[in-house]
Every structure is written in C-alpha cells, then in structure tokens.
Image (tube, rainbow, N blue to C red; front, side, top):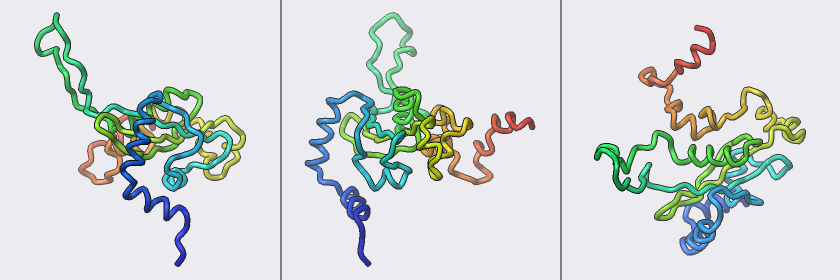
Amino acid sequence: MVKGLYHAIRKAWKKPDVDTLRARMVEWRKENVVTKIERPTRLDRARALGYKAKKGVVVARVRVLRGGRKRARTNKGRKSKRHTIKKTVKMNYKWIAEQRAGKKFPNLEVLNSYNLGKDGKHYFYEVILVDASKPEIKNDRVLGWVADKSHRKRVSRGLTSAGLKSRGMRSKSPMNKNRPSVRAGLRRGK
C-alpha cells in the first residue's frame, strides 16, 4: 500500500529533528505571544482538526508560560500567607492557549488546537480559528455548524476539545460528578 504525504508529515512529527525544532522555537520566542501565521506548521494535524485553506479560516501560534501559576514573590506589606508564589492551574495549557487566541481575535471562533512543542520556559500551540460571518464558512458543509448562534464564544464556555477534557467531560462514568452538568440541567428548566 502506498502511503501519502500526510503519513510522511505525521511520521516526521513523531520524532522531529531536535536542532530544527530548537531553531524554530528561538524564532517563535521573539514573536508576539499570539501570532497569526500564513499556513499551519503541522499540516496533517491541522487538516485532521478541521483546517481548510480557504477564506475565513485563520491559524495562530500561541506561546504559554510553563510552571503552573508561578509568579514573582511579593516584596512586603502583606501577611506571610498572602505571599503566595504558586497556585495550581485549574485549566490545561491547551485551553489557556485557545482562550488567549480567542481574546486576540474577538470576531473569530476557536475551532481546535494542537501542540507544537515545548522548551524550558514555554509551551507552543497552534490554534485554528474560523470567521463564522463569512459566506464561505456558512455554506461549507463541514464547517457550517460554527455559524450557528449556539456556538458563539465556545472557547470561553469550555466547549472546545481541550475545554471539554479539562472540565472532565470525557469520562462517561456514573462516578463522574461533572456529568450531567448542574447548570445545563437548570438551563433545560428541570
């Protein structure tokens, strides 16, 4: 069986060339935290998550600081208990990256995202965003659902893949306390 281009790209990203990736990360660190890019770095992953090279589809690279909520220790004028320098993050980093991209481009909806790599200080993600107001998107049979009003600000409501995972919605076990959501039941009028 003949393997195609996407198979080769996927195989290359399983074990990426360390020197090339390191050189790229050095360049990415010099850019803004959220940078709009022309085309995806990992084309196979982007296509699998819904990316199409058409009007209304945008890709942004996002850089997120690693290390929890670690911040510089406060200097003075507080109780010692208020000198907190580390707190646990309640969201996964992918969801944080998606939210930041969503804030940077308020007229676009976040479709999905994927991992690029990490260095000692940052995680790097690419986020796929869609302009739901474009007729090319509204008439697209695969991406048309994003134009519906129920999907407005979906990243802020934790409805993207990373958001659902972070909220614990992947598990369908009866022991899972998040499913069904209490607030969802209230909205239904129960």
